[in-house]
Image 1 (cartoon, rainbow, N blue to C red):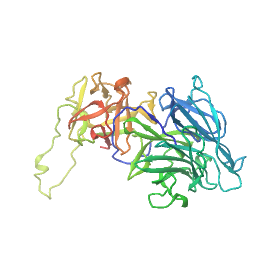
Image 2: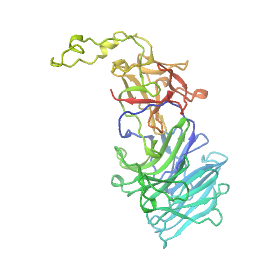
Image 3: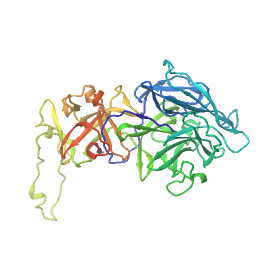
Image 4: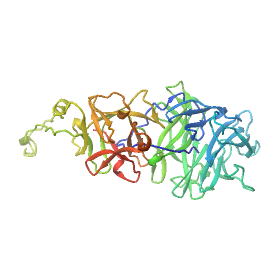
Amino acid sequence: MKRLATAAIGLCLCLGFHASPAAAQLEGEPFIHDPSTIVLSDGRYYTFGTRGGGLVSEDGWTWHGGPERPGGGVAPDVVKIGDRYYMSYAIGGGGMSGGHASQVRMMWTRSLDPKSPDFGFHDIGVVASSDGVEMADAIDPAFLYVEGRLWLTYGTYFGPIRIIELDPSTGQRVARNQPVDVAIDMEATAMMYRDGWYYLLGTHGTCCDGPNSTYHIRVGRSRSPLGPYVDHMGVPLLRGGGKLVVNARGRNIGPGHFGLIELDGGVEKFSMHYEADMNRSGRSVLGIEPLLWKDGWPVAGENVRPGTYEIQSERSGYALGLATDFVRIAFDVRRSFMAKPGEPVSPIPDQTLAEDSAVWPQERIRVDLADYMVRPHQLWTLEPVPGAGGYFGSPYYKIVIAGTGRALAATPSDTVETVPAFTGAAEQLWRIDQLTDGTYRIAPKSATGAKKDLALVAIGASTPTLASFDPKSPAGRWSFRQP
């Protein structure tokens, strides 16, 4: 499992229609296969993959080649417990040159940064193995550390998925602990724990065939880490069951190797690799998407796609807009509600931007929340800003009044207003993260230091401002709806 706890900033919005995730994901060189847990070490984020290679990032958005881990092998995983980073990986197996004879090995270090004085891997040894004759394959290890206990799952399609318990103080196998079979017809497993349920996620389908790979991720759950795990239809994972979590989308084919990313403020995301990024020569790349929870089950979320929206407050249902004078739409009252049923009808034109903007001040304009009237001053265009960066799978966006350059901006006094033109300044860049209930939060890139948790929040029914985000309150949750 890929599990991460770190600081997050932002605000939330809810998508009022179904859309697939944005195709462009992550910047830099995010090339990896079988990515491990994303972990924070000495101020940077690390993930490791098959054949020893890894990636490193300052912000979870732009990734570059990282340090090589020792040991080689395939499909590592990492978990931090206390001051140690435990790393598991497999040698042999997978039906490759070693057949299905394989070993899951363990090692630890106090830092993942080779330049740190605390860096240095210490070998623990073998914690699981398969002999190549039995119907089992000891590869693809993944950790779950919860309530003081450390679990490790492993296995592939060649036999069952198994779980063992490790000693979190040493990383060694608990004495006399025997593996328990918990699933079949999957590989690259991960585990999560939520609300008393243990979730076992596994990758189904075929891998390693580029755009022809059928990899996708499914899940079952149990009240015990040892199972039995069943899906939403009651089908046991030991009989091949599993509820769909994520499959191919857009130009990204074959998601596998799920990894949980927990951010502050109630934001959860997950990492994976795509077997083929069709925009990058079909190479295997790291991907990060929002994670939602529906009826007690995890499912892939989606970043906001570029477009024009109403931004609706989950607190009041009112729409974000410019605080300007109301411009009426001309109509003939005798042909509307005073008309007789048989009289002919004709369309009334929408209010134009020129009509609405005739009363707008030329300089800065504050924003408010009001009844949604499908007026130009309530319509916002969202676009990722090239080169502006991002944070864990989501780019920084500009938010402008549709058809104009008038941009939403944070102020030094922690309020919000619009400026006449978008310049790319940090206070005009916004991070938009989907929350686990499907709504979104919006946060300014310019928020730093003690104010890093600032997000767009509705104060009362009609006043938007920047304040600390409370994941338990609807005040900081928003939905994006098409006009």
